[in-house]
Amino acid sequence: MWFYNFWDIISTITESFSLLVIIDCFCQTPQIQRNINRIIWPAAYAAVVIWLTFFTDLGALKMFIGMSIIVAILKFAYRFTFHESLIIMEVSFVVMSMFPEALVVSLMSFICNGDITNTIGNVLILKWQLYVLTILVRCICLAVVYYLLHNFHYRLQRKDAFVLTIGFLLTFCVSFTSAYNYLNLQLEDTLILDLVTTVLCMYFIVQFLYTKNVSYLREQEQKDKIQIAQLNRQFDYYREKLKDEERVRSVYHDMKNHLLVLQQQIHSPETATMVENLKSQVVMYENYTHTGNDFLDIILKDKAEKAHEKKIDLSVSVNLNGVDFIEPLDISTIFGNGLDNAIEASEKLPEEQRAILVKAGRIQNFFSLLIENNCLEMKKSIKSRTTEQDDFFHGFGISNMKKAAEKYGGQLTTKCENGQFTLKILVPIP
Image (cartoon, rainbow, N blue to C red; front, side):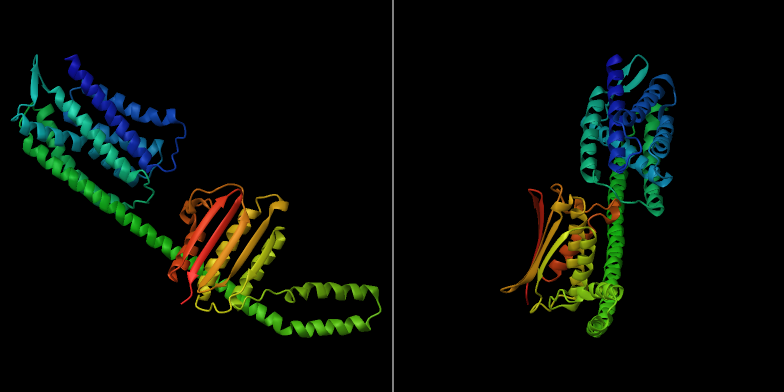
């Protein structure tokens, strides 16, 4: 008897391990930080299940207690919402318990012509081979689930939980009936129920994967809306700046001439100093960067002021003459985000290392853009190249630049090595 008890305990331990892995797949920002704390709760679940199996006569009724424990762990130890806890419990129970057990019992019933039990004393018990096969199938299912869900980070909604729970309850009712007939009523012929359970488990898994894909599409749609809103706000900002700059430039030359006249007529040192200060405040318009694109001129001026405030050496060589096919919104996306990222990276460095180089123009039949800046370390992915803390917005800058370049049949490449980050865009000129 101890041999069968051993396999029963091993099976329960693998269930608990499956629970730990599945929780980790869903829990991208765990509340329980230490590994020992993460293991405590699945271990407690295993201990309770073993106690219910060997020291009570509940039989299949222990399934209700097991599900309640899982929901409680998810809700209070990991702080999932109730509907999220419900979904994770359902996926866990199907993967680690109902599907492997129903599948193995169905297959072994066919292979052994229904003879899948042994009688030890007065106790009817499943053959040990079923325990081994169930553990094997459970491990395979767990590997597949981990492959599908290890990057799971979507928000499941209440309506998702409602639809999935209906499918789960139907599956659970059939599975519970089969387990109750065997464990509580000592009925051996549960083949039909096990076959139905297997099919319903597969349906539930397909239903969950469909819900997962819907959640992904829903999240992408929301991200796209936010991206479009951000780009439009950025575009409106530069458009208003352009209007302001045009108004200032329209009076600049008159102001300069008036100041020259005042400077020749005054004799007071204080007044002369005041005139010099006024001239220094408007002299920036003499050094205005002219790229051949008024909209880009405003962007470069705005970024040059930010770079100057942060004591960053910004060198610009841009000529967009002959490059008139890029829309203003895309000009804003490409140059605005590119310079924002470079300024953000540069301000983390010592002042003597803060330098940005921007070169853009027509090279034969291509529009080329190069942005170089010093950086602290190599970034391993486009997604991690910004420092925004909110993962939802993480990496929007470069991803938007990439989309803008691809819109015109071009491509964006990045490289970070030897402390220097390089961004290149190459777009064919139609």
